[in-house]
Image (cartoon, rainbow, N blue to C red; front, side, top):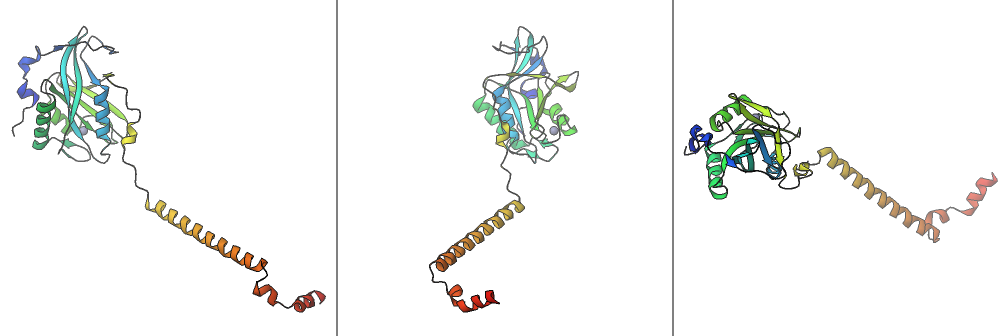
Length: 249
Ligand SMILES: [Zn+2]
């Protein structure tokens, strides 16, 4: 598998020297420690991707640079690439050889001067944590000290970032760089639920009832017009004498 993972293309020896000096204007909450900073546009894209599948996990990689400002090192996540052809079951996700080929092609095409700084995947409805398989993926492909795992639950609307801390991925607060206004309702990306069969049948019954009532009203109107116009055969067919007789008796 001809895949350049970050650890192969980067290497631990480079880690101390690779921080890019960059100060993000208007970034709130920066502390004197390593923090993950994710652009709002990337969060929105992860949310949108997550809402394309609510029955299975989706995944992708995070793109950016390890940076440094007055407060020290931080990770700037500036873009992401969807993991096409990734196989997923309900509780885990796997990067296949095809996924890596696609990611590498997109890196070369769109982000030649950026790095793969981590990965994201979704947990539809089962919360924020790293499973055994997730840990395996994180250790195998994203083992540099500044690489991050991001988990999003599109049903629970929760999300979390995991950074390396003494050899273990630990969930940490992350900062959001407001490079654009946030999408207000990622929910709108959810597929519109199909109407339940019973709802469809109910609609049909109501339609038939309305048609029957309309037909009855038309028939009644015609009858009334016919009868009031004096052409009614039934009332006039009753002999006047018979009616009189009833009253008389
Ligand atoms: Zn997972």
